[in-house]
Amino acid sequence: MFKSLMMLVAGLLVIGLVLMTAVSRSETLQGKLVYRAATAGMSQRFEVTDGLTVMMCGTASSLGNNPDRAQACVAVLTPEHFVVIDSGSGSAGRLVTAGMPLDRLQAVFLTHFHSDHITSLPDLNLNSW
Image (cartoon, one colour):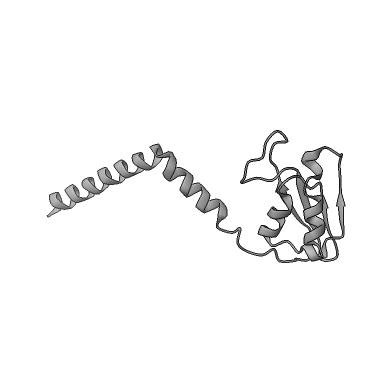
């Protein structure tokens, strides 16, 4: 009885090691697991708290636009105020996706006038009505 139990445990360990090795070498499966973990909380709407909420809504490079990332944008939300610093390409969409209250947007501050910091100004204006 003890011998068969040990054989069963050893067999399960071998199967577990084989599966872990397969997962660690599969880029597709790794990508799906990371994507699932990263997007798990993204469908939730931002709730206004009694404190300060800062969202990095755009962190992509100025040289290209990754469809999964927007260019320069930082959103600052408090119970009384909502401002955005820079509005690079795709940032308005990121704010909408995150559930930020664009109808409360009070100001957009621009650090400088490069296109990767101002492209979504019309979109922010349209979405804030």
